[in-house]
Amino acid sequence: MTNTSGSLTQVTACIGTFPAEVVGQIILASSDLCILVGPDLIVKDVVLGFALEDIACTTWRGAALRKLVGPEGQRKVDLLWSDATVEKTGWRHLNLRTDHADAELPLLVQRIATGTGDSVLVCRDLRPAVRVQQQFNRAMTEMEQRREDVVDLFSPVPASHIPAGAGSKGVTGVLDTRSAQADAMVRQAFDGLGRHSLSQIVAQTARVLEEMCIREAYAQCGHDLAATALLLEMDADDLAQRLAFYQGKP
Image (cartoon, rainbow, N blue to C red):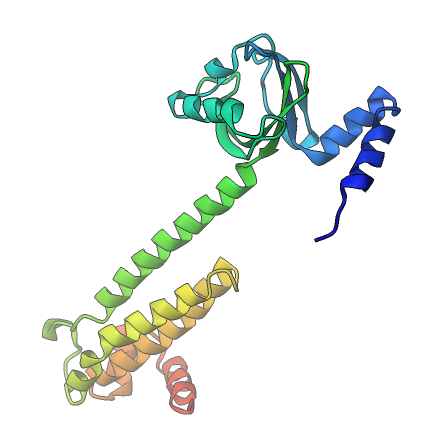
C-alpha cells in the first residue's frame, strides 16, 4: 500500500495558505454539500455544490440538525457523533428535509471533527443512485409482468377461437413446452440486465416472443397458413415470409 501521509501533510500545509475562494472551490469539487455544525448540533453554515443548486434549504442555517432528519435518522446522527474515530467517522445515509415539506434529500454523510468543537458534514448526493434503483425496480416489475403475459399467451386456445377448418394435429406437443420456453425467454432477458439497456432487452424479447407466438399459432392451426394468418390477423404473404425465415433458422 502506498504511504501518502507525507504528501497529505504537504498538501494540507499548502491549503492553509490558499485564499478562501480557492479553498471553497476545493470543497465544492470534492463534495456535493458541506454543512458546518456546532458542538450543540446547530447548523452554522451550508455550502451547496453545483449538483444541488436546485435544492431549497434556506431553513437549515440556525436549525437543529436533529430537526432536519426524520425519526429513522436520529440514531444515525448519534452514530456520526459517537464513532470511535472522532476525527473522521464512517459514511452514513441521511435524508434531510428541504424547504418543501414533502421533499427529502438523500445524502451519504461523513462527519469530520475540526478540533474546535465544530464538525463538518461532507455530503454526497444520493439522488442519482436512488433514480437508478427506481429504474431497476421498474424494469424488474415490467419483466415480471411480461413473464405473466407470456405464460397467458401460451395457454391453450379455446376451440371456439380457432378458425373453422383448422386442424389440431401437433398442437399438444407445442403446448407442452410453452411454459419452459416462456421461462427461458424471461431468464435470458433478466441475464441481460446490467449488460444491455432496457430498450435493447425489450426489443430482443419482443422478437423472440413474436417468433414463439407465430410458431404456436401455426401449430394450433394444423400448419394451415391461411387459418394462421386469420387467427393472428396478419397478411398471409407477410406471415409466409416470417415462417420461412423462422423455419430456416438453426
